[in-house]
Length: 310
Image (cartoon, rainbow, N blue to C red; front, side, top):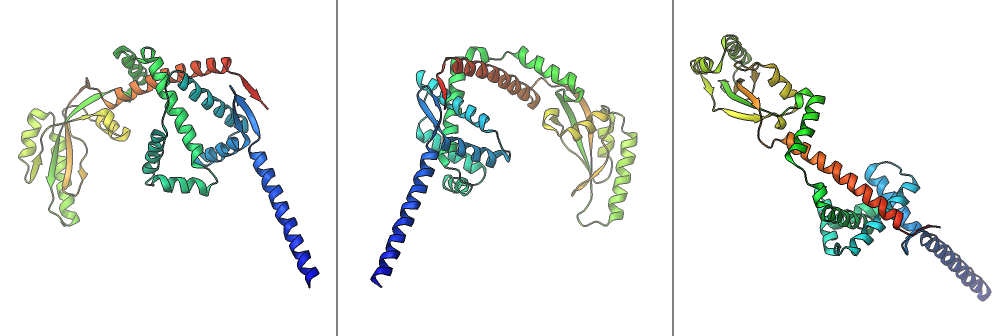
């Protein structure tokens, strides 16, 4: 009996040793240095974690070389930031991390748990946040003058967009909503009758000066105040509809919960305001310049860096 107990104890010790050896092998493999960037190591674990995160966030499988290059760039960005006194505190990183979670209706703790379920440590994402934030501040700060845009730059970009898509120009539509009222719960024949009245009004509506008073004369009809809609705020489908209606005429009748509604197009003019189209053009030009400057800056850092691949 004593001999049997001794055998069991010995066997348990052997199993424990084997487990310890395996665990040590895994840890050593994970800590294997893949690349050294200016004296800072990138380990196999760093690469593995980033690959898992990219697969989780993009649903794509990136190449290992691309992941390693991204990690090298991040090391260079953070190091260059320190050289110029641009650093992001742990608190700032945590706040950005929490904001990312809130956009998906999750707390920072829940985001951490969701990442862990896919085998991703939250620090993997935080490292990327830190590098991106430092780089944004660094490039904008060092090359502010090169990134500034003039009105001419925006106008040229907007013109190019308009030439590529003639319907993309920025216009102000001056409209008057006209509503033929229908009582709630009315039968279909009542709605059809009001629709016919709307079509009749539309056929004789030639301009807003004479048409608006005529619309007011139609029974149970409300002519609302003039409104101006920016084409950049409208969906492409609606913009096409408005473009197809000549100035001084009505859009096709549409049944709404209040009745049958049409819009009198009383004017259409090129917009002088900072429309969404102009804002998009400005953002696109800025993003292009930033990307060009960022790429050139990073290429220079790579040429000057000591990168040792193991």
